[in-house]
Length: 398
Image (cartoon, rainbow, N blue to C red):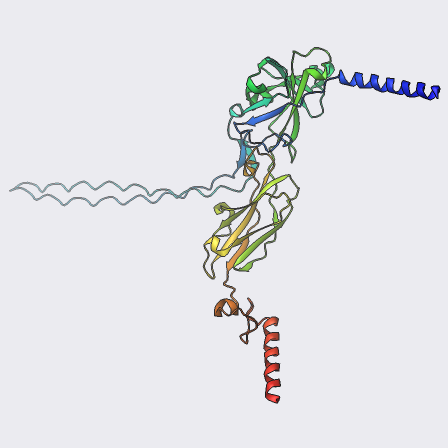
């Protein structure tokens, strides 16, 4: 018995020692980007922080504009004046000078830009502000910011060395910590300018389809040697400059009063935040306009709209398109990178009214056959008719 007590006592001593050791090791802080461009409406701390095409100063570039039309022909010169009447015994006056030629006609307007082909510089990332909120309870006045590639361990001296090209100090250190543990006066350009061994750590020139991951290391003191986990936090972010591909829609024409556009996942697939329906009077996506019809389910595969919502009368047609927006947003799901419009779906408004709609008699079977869209009676109407005929024949037999 005493032996057993000794063993148990030894086990508890070891566990107490392990527990005591664990409690002296502070956890690394989970700092985070709390706002981008003044928008702090992130749904949760778990939502990925993105800088997108617009933040990076990029936009989809259209093709070259069409050549302007040729100018009109110059106008014809004015007719010469009549010769003056001769004075008494004098010579006849000279004819008036011819009028000046008219100005050439105005050249035609340039053609529409071509389809989207590339990304071009639009604005300056130095205008894109962001803030970092520290996961902190104890007072801290200044911090030192470094940027690292995905998976980099910038707390390690060797990975902070320029030869490693994994981590780089962000200019402007030390940074002041304001109220509520917020670091402000930061811009995207600060992240893009940080270099290691002459190579930028982060870039807006390219990214993966779902973005490229980077880390901001927030050291509570100037880093030296191996930094203890209690002396820094990490704020994760992504740069995503690749818009989602267009949804692959079913382009079969539709003739009815309610239209349903269906699609399969874009290829290649992306992280989708919203799907939006667009409409055009012609099969030309350049002239399409967005409808206020959006589905924010990432796995949505269809959107529906009534012909009346499109302003279509019976027999009128329009073309419907779908656009996808990815996850690179803050609070507005339509604020992420937007893809190109899908192929168009031709829809034609047809008033599909049954006998109940026309007669107002919706009490049950009727001898008036309900017509289908193709003009043929429905099977249900035929069955009702046959039942009524059988009852009528039975009554005659009696």
